[in-house]
Length: 397
Image 1 (tube, one colour):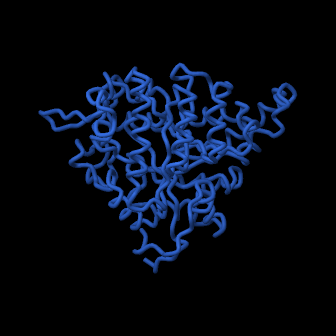
Image 2 (tube, helix red, strand yellow):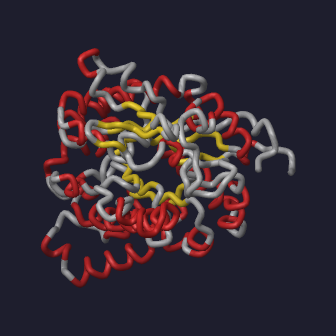
Image 3 (cartoon, helix red, strand yellow):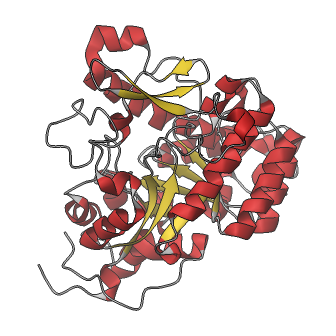
């Protein structure tokens, strides 16, 4: 490997923390201790799962922390004792980041769901809000070993729009740099994105200058990791089906966003599609533009002064992980200013041991300017990440 250079650093726009078992039991008020989310271990197998209200998750805690596990997925750590330290410890995570040349990493949850929807199972609105706030405070504490190298993304209690706006304002003051929001609130019985019901949330995000993330998996998982599917096809095939389905769900959410009217009303507000890839984006933009013109949308909605693809170029980003074709061949149709890089560490579909190989396969033919935008500058501008003044401490690989 060559001598590391400052420009070798990249920004990872999607990683996850394996939450410690005492996150909520140690942080919630005493009256919520017994009902707080907590890890339950099967005394016979040693397998640990999260208990959230009456819901016991189907997957062991280690299924979201398989990066580096010696056996191929669906083999995974069965409990937190076996989970790799970098999945739950910030200092160990920084060491991992140094090895692969990641300067800063955005942080997303596991337990509460990728849009806080798991907390709905608690039924008690006060407890649900307390869980969201406890998680957001935990993340700020977690990054304390080196805050400049982490990008904390706050969770929202989306079932209460006013509480969500208040939480955005609170978390912006303590160091959060982005907002996690469900891209399909209607799947949880809430108004659709286009509803003005959500304006207080958009207004808070705009006022705090925080981008909003639509992470995959914010819906109901009704046709994903179901017991029937797991029993019939096994965990590996189920994961494949669920992962690809979730990618495509984000395409529907982007389409909903482009026609929602949010982007014309809040021209300064930025949105991200996270962990879904970018290969479908050119088709979505072409299809949206065609139906926009064919359906005479502008004539009926004069607030739409731009076509959907133009709003995307102005305000929306897509994150890619393992793709090689899309970053290499579709950059012009997506826009090099609208693409971000991620590893999804330490999830089953994440990059691990192949980070630089995948980067070069996707961007080896890109111009140095385009490569730098995708790997660093776009995310640095979006999240206000300071440029590094030192090279990676070891040759990156």
